[in-house]
Image (cartoon, rainbow, N blue to C red; front, side):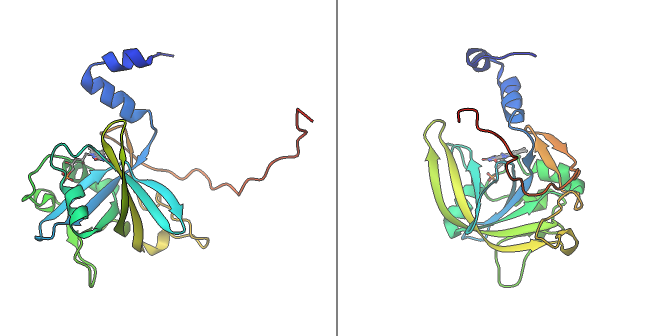
Amino acid sequence: MKTFDLNEIHQLEHIYKINLINSVTGVKSANLIGSISNSGMVNVAVFSSVVHMGSAPPLLGMLFRPTTVARNTYDNIKDNGYYTLNHIHQHNIADAHHTSAKYPFDVNEFEMTELEEEYKPGCAIPFVAGSPVQLLMKYKNEYPIKENGTILLVGEIQKLYVQEDLIHSDGFVDLAKANVVGINGLDGYVKTTLIERLPYQRPKEYTASNS
Ligand SMILES: Cc1cc2nc3c(=O)[nH]c(=O)nc-3n(C[C@H](O)[C@H](O)[C@H](O)COP(=O)(O)O)c2cc1C
């Protein structure tokens, strides 16, 4: 096995280091975050740091890079408190990836790609059309991560739109069936394949070693 100790990690060339460390977390979810400023400027950007935080209430976390430079998605969420989360379909990976380009505030990334805005009745926040899983999220709170200046933003699911044939009778959403992709590192998009669903696990019969 190739081994890196912390000191060696610090010394690595920048791009090598970010690729290495972004890959070792494992495959992450691939999301397009749609948002709009109070002045009506639409934004969409790719985010992979979405984590499940709990089902009741239904909370998702998302990590923002330090706001030392303009972060349009973060600013829009702080403006009006809402955003959408849209899973990335295999057919959209090039356009989805392009949304990571640093466009200024007054450029709508939907217009720079083939991605299409979708508006649900009574909702001004943009969704990504054709995405098989779309969520309307509400800002709840944020927590500064002192160690590196990032921000953990906590949002609550307000509305959930799921392509109907993906939902099993017990509520499980089969993302692989929808050709939703995952992200390996910062630029590796992977297909998903459902291997098997396994039943709820209970401890086996065992004898405690210290009894
Ligand atoms: C695959 C991928 C995943 C990303 N995930 C995140 C993330 O989780 N958090 C983050 O702050 N930036 C992430 N980025 C960077 C943003 O997409 C990038 O900063 C983008 O310009 C943000 O757009 P905005 O300024 O319009 O919000 C990611 C970029 C890529 C290519």
